[in-house]
Length: 544
Image 1 (cartoon, rainbow, N blue to C red):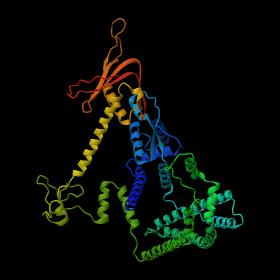
Image 2: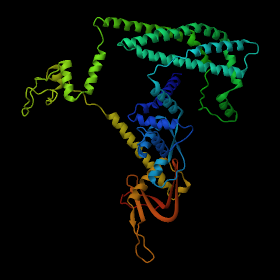
Image 3: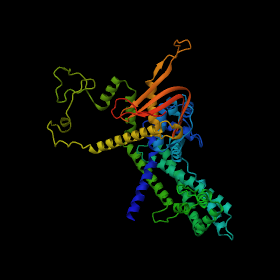
Image 4: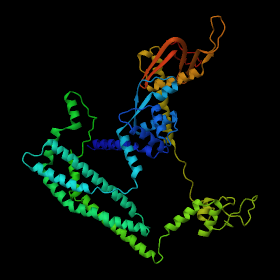
């Protein structure tokens, strides 16, 4: 039992870590470019986009990501794929060059987690500092909806399933909007409460906000909370039967896995997030908002306590303003004005302002003589004078003597072992890709290469074409004509003991099938052979 619980906890931590990685792009150095890319994907529904499509949309929208080239954009997209914000999908690509094929062979689409995070980020960027009004009128609608639902459920015959479903959906939408507006408003209120230097105008507005608006909210909640609690108490014994009746009437997405299993298929990986109000936990949360069900107080009690703390903060600011009349006032505005003067002043004027504000005059002596070849006049300011290196021990303790013992040499054996293991794995992957290419030589039309094998083949092909020998074609008269043609090309990797030979044959079509897409080579034949163990450059025979 202990091992099972430990494994479940590790799985939960790993899942939480994976989901939190999706927030990484919001704090990366290129976060503005990542946000612009994610907005392009959020502007479409069920669409996968290639690099050229994304580049065109970024140029249309403008901003910091409009100037990204194809290679940089591909790097950004791959980072978003690693973090879990995007998914990569493969398709057939028509490309005129290897580089274009490498850029266009993958298309990308949005994940649910990435869409949710970007939607929340856009909301924060749009209205994070605004004071959100509390949807107080929704509380009356919640009360009326609960009372009407309680009357229908307790009546003979109960409530009609479709009518009950509509009422419950409307009820929870109204309650969710009201609860969200309460949280947003009191979060803004806490931000204002943290300030201790409100002036008279700001204090007056803050006082009206608390005494009028907050008081109206708390009074309305205190008036309607007992009525909502009474309606919920009446409705509570009938909730399980009501939910079962609604599920039998309209199962929604929860009916899909059941139908699939009835047909002989199993979909254990499909997780369904039900609509608000369709599960008992939603009703427990609604009841706990207005009633003390767990002994820790309801949300209504917390709302009342938060209002009391806000009034106490208002009283503290009032006392501070009364003390300011006797000279005990904050210097925040004076310091902000001085900072603005520093920001707008020229360098020499900033020195004069610092002297006038803080009495900082030019230094004459620091206790350490300058170098013998530097003669500094006594009237030279320390702002413009040469820098004298002061030892740390002398600067902090006033003594040149070394204290303590030398620290031990840091052990990097673990990091070295990790690097060696990573290098070994990379070498093993490349060796496996080379073996796959050698075994597939001569029958490319019958096999599907892996991503690693295709990457190694493209690497060898690019090197071979770069080392290609070009010659002028011979005409019918025996003379060489204008232009060039490919006679032969080859490349090899001595470490992997693999050699690629490329021949130009008119009318030949070589198709390479891979997990990342299909690559078509016109008028080219590929031979892949094995280098001899002696390393003399001779390749073993291979079949094209």
